[in-house]
Length: 312
Image 1 (cartoon, rainbow, N blue to C red):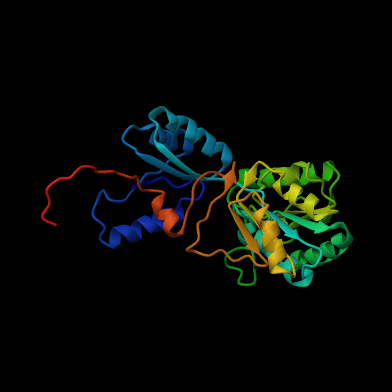
Image 2: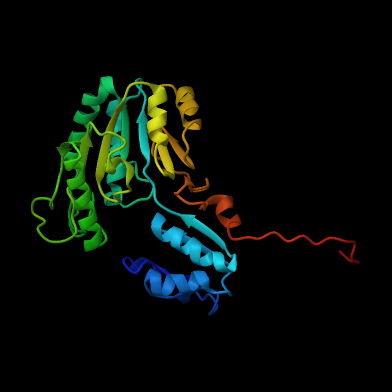
């Protein structure tokens, strides 16, 4: 096994490697290399002695790794981006589910591939959803790791901070209704990669903020007029990693969930089971992590035929 962590966030992998070494794993069984994608990652993907590449990251990088690896026809498993939707049906418990779905996005400052960055609500309950979501976001405290009262911290890099700021500005320019947050850093945090938890309402799913993976604490609330339209909007994305459905009827929620083109759908909750496969459809990649399928990703099948003599 050769691990190459992101050059932006390598510390966790470094600590894990130290723990593996201290545990006495034989040298060579587990290895780690440091470097950026173009100069290190592509070498790994192209090397003829590498049988399989498992990549977690952006869709752009996953596409490039697949192209490079194709020259040696090695296996490639990709866990990529997402633009997941929380679809609340008209009978859903908004007071319970809107805060739950909003905080699913806000945790980790929105830097999660499966984050619920779109919220689809009936037009008749659009104002109600805005009011609840705004109240939740206004209670989210952004701060440094030493601040015990902080709910979320900064983004991973200056480049990502600038990217998220650009999307917020684009949302405003394209006519979305900014109801919370906005450009710039939160009050009292003049330095660092901190972003204001931001909510846009009256969003059209064709807008940039509803189509692109922002990877920050930015929520788009999108109204719909029928269940069929809601399903169409949820599926109207190049991604297919995760979605959520909220309804007072679990049976109805399951019926809707079956029509969503995503590898995962959470029903009236944001729980992800560690023994269930984690992965998506479309440009969210082809990998499955966790559970039995997560192990099978790294296996190949061998057939031995005939009738050899055996003492077994």
